[in-house]
Length: 107
Length: 278
Image: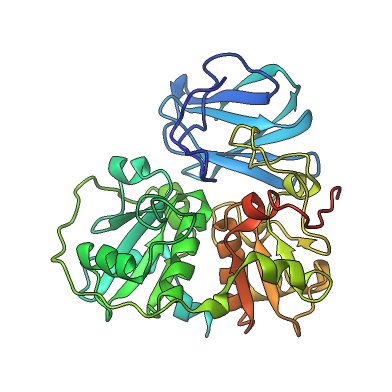
């Protein structure tokens, strides 16, 4: 269903960019995006997912293509991007079961 | 113990790189981050390959820990500075693990790899060579490690702190949201556990909040009774090592244990009580 990524099934850590969805999305509620600056991927930075109450849920370092993937639950979420130079940008996003919600974030 | 005994900041590390008797160690589950770039002179520890037994679900034994640190060129007298990704989860786990095996001169780099990167500080790919040592560990200090029966017996008696996200606590998610939700065990939490997500103890840049903020978080806001012993858990014990560090090392609470079996063990046990919902 998903790519193998680099995070082991037994672990809890976040590999850079998260584990990309490479085949079907199955019953997951996926939030996936890319972070760019002036059209180029942002390579050093972090994306964190906050729930509807603004509480932290997960965080990944940005991937080599500035990409991020989260496996959320259905509902409203906020994606917060942190990057060097005090960059802090937020986007609202809605996740649904069986769907990949894509978003592009320019910082 | 004060904060300066257990934490150093990025400026301090920058100005002490290469000091004799100081060993910088990056700890991660995914060590490809180290391979792409790490703080100069840092050696690496792989949370899974180096710190977990290859067959049983347990730590490497005392002899294994001695071999590991000897091979990394770490001496009993060295000051070990740990840092890593994931807001220092695995570095905090390694900190607790070093304490478990009796290495007392160990500190965390506040904010870990994230703070270092967000500060745009230098990372290198050169791997330092350190001459092997003959490291001696002690037997495990079981006063800081909890096992499943202690957790069951603590229900309704001791402080139980579930440090996972609110959605994992409630049973809506079975793993952190950066991982696929395909775990086999039941969702929920240990009855009477308070949910204080680890993330509430840290700022966005991964640094720990002030002692006053932390004391208010666990005391007034979460309702922990500081006169009682405490067991912290998460899913596999590394986020709860972060909270163990806060309660035991920063706030100086005397009897705090990390339950490293955590939800992947508890949520798969037959016959134990589970609560779901917020």
